[in-house]
Amino acid sequence: MRAAVVALVSLTVVGLAGCGGGGGPSHRDFVQDAGSICQEANQRFARVEIVSPTATRAEAALGDIVEIGAIALRDLRRVKPPKGDASEAAAWLAALEQALDEVDYARTLLRDGDVVRAVAAIARADVLTRRARKLARATGVARVCQVPELLPGA
Image (cartoon, rainbow, N blue to C red):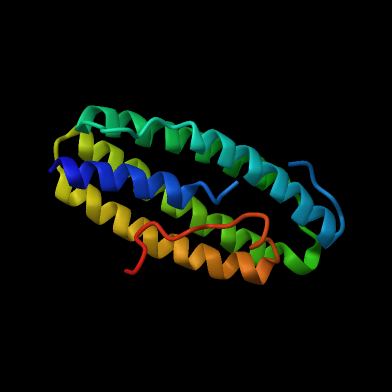
């Protein structure tokens, strides 16, 4: 069980570290502003404590991850993409938000002692982050807002 908790938190931090202000009318400005937000979120994700977590510490770490991700998403939604990127940017952010919701659900499941279902929630988040990576490429932000795999090799 401890190994599952450690893997759960570690993979979540790695996976969501790729998500990550002000708006601009051009595609270049949009990508630059999104990149600044992602960089700040990545720095905050890197400080989340995941060393030898217990279920309680894993729950706390996932709570930190959800908080950081929510702030990054809020800030990313404030960046106005140019008209040509609007639908792809909205879909990208929606996929990231859904992945973050699954991480939050995993946190709740850990609090309730349900490690198996928490790992399943992270697996669903992984599917959503894969989608987010594809959408990031379509939006043009993939280089500055990388979304790594939550479950490598899955």
